[in-house]
Structure formats: structure tokens, C-alpha cells
Length: 373
Image (cartoon, rainbow, N blue to C red):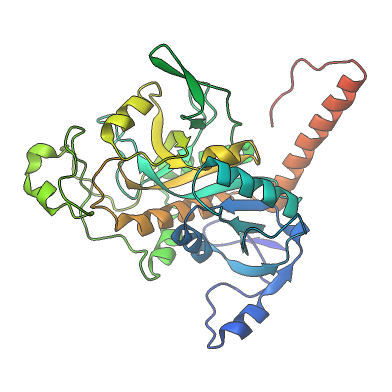
């Protein structure tokens, strides 16, 4: 049974064990969790790193137990829970990169046959482009299609033609219902509402996830890290001449940036590489690893919290946990914009269209135009 909470989000009446109830006996706490069938899982959330998984788990309204359907050897240990009316699986690939992500997504599809779509949630490297795009640490990047691109671009899949790297193929777009939910959140932002503020506050109360006190420093592209390790004390001692001067941002809430996410198998750690990889994509906002491997397995929206600037300076290591929290907060805000029944109807309509198109083709009739859902 559904009801609306004080913020207008759709929520079901709770019947299981809410997340956050303390227990002195860990085993008894696990036993108390409600068990659901794998067929009840309709959404998958993919995270590459352990602290990203923890941030998403802190955002859950309720935790579940579930025994996945047999689909070959058990390769992944997943977590289960509920956000709003959506029952979901949180899966983590065995290692970073597009290949491992694709393998994990394929396994999830077999173990949970009713998964409708996915979200990849975690941290990424921001691509600031001043003054038009002032991306800061802790901000949020969302993969929204731009300029005939599908939202995520696999920048390392292609071939060189002369002195230019030409991409091969194109990934699928995010699900329309998730793009629409993001659009509704953008409207909330324009009206001065902040639907993820309370969600983020709840996560950042947990140990390690609060906003760090360390500064947010963007160094110029030609200035590289000068010390061993991650300490940037000597870099900062060089003075403001090596820093990109930016206006002071008064607001503490993260800003959401919508555009293209450049995904590959490796981590970009050089500002020159950052510049060359994104020069053909004016709307590129973030680098990530792994998202491209999921897009063609399960329809997916990618949400990234910005934890660095794809450069050699890692003085902002303390931002990783907070960036994971901002991404998890936005994921929850997106899913609270619609209920599971609406998602099922939309996906059933999509499946009906696909089935009908196949039947028509088998009878040598062809549909030339299909309105996308």
C-alpha cells in the first residue's frame, strides 16, 4: 500500500525491518530481515567500490535478504533493499573496468529476471570548463543524452584514422522514466526546492561520509603534482599562480550537472589527457570507469559524485566518501519520483512493442517508425 510522505515522495507502508534499527547481536539482526524472492527485484544499482556500496546502503529505506536464482557459479555477493516502493539489488563487479562491469550486469540479468533498469552510482572525475561549467568537488554528474550522444561515451573503444581516434559504435540511452525523473528534480531545483538535502544529511551523519574540511583546489593544466604520495602541501605552497581562480561558492548543497559521461577501462590522471579526451564533446562533464560495460546489458542511468579533477593532484582524497554520499542521495531522489507499478507498466509497454515488432518482421511486414517510450 502506497502513501506520500511530507516531501511528496511515494512510499509504501513498511512491513519489513527499517534500515537503521540497532541490534547488539549481528546474527539476530540478519535473521530479522525480511526475505524477498528474486522475482521481486526490479531495479539494479551497480557500484564499483566498497564505500560506494555503503553510501547506497545508508540511503535505503529498508534492507532485505534474497537468494538469487541459480545462474552458474556464484561470483558476486550482493545486497538487497528498498527505496520508496522499489525492491532493488546492489551489485559490485569483482574489479574496476568495463569488461568486469559488463560481466556483473549480465549475471544480475540472469539472477533477477524482472530487473527493469539500472543505475550506476559512485564517484567520478569532474571535467571543469570555466566559466560555462563550474564543476566542484562533491557536485553530481548525471548521464543525460546531449547532441545526439546517448549520455555515456566509451572513449577508448574505436580506432585511429590518421591522427584522430574514431569511436566505434554507440551505447544505449538511459531509460526514459529515469530521464523524466531527473527532469522533475531539475524543476524542483529551479523552484528552490532541495529534495536531496535531507537524504544527504542522513547519509553524512554516518562515520566518514561528512563533507571534508579540506579545500577544493583546481590546479592549472600544466602544473603537475610535485611530491610523493597524495600530500599537496608543496603544491599549494607554490601560491595562487598555479591555481585556477574561481568565484567563492556560498551554497553548500551540491550542484547537479547534466551531460555526457566519458567511460573507459582506465583512470584518467593527467589534465592534458583530460583536455584531449573531452575536446570533441562540449557537454562532457565527468570521467568514470565501468559504466560503458553496463549500458548495453541493462538500460542504465549513471550518477557520479565528483571526487577529483582527473589530474595528478590527489589532495582531495577526503572527498571520495562525501562524493559517494552525494551520488547515493541523488539516486534515492530519482527513484522516489515514481512508483514501481509505473515502471512495470512502462517496461511492459516497451516489451509489447518489441514483441509486436518481432512478430510483424517474421511476417515480412516492417514498422518504419516507433515512438520511443
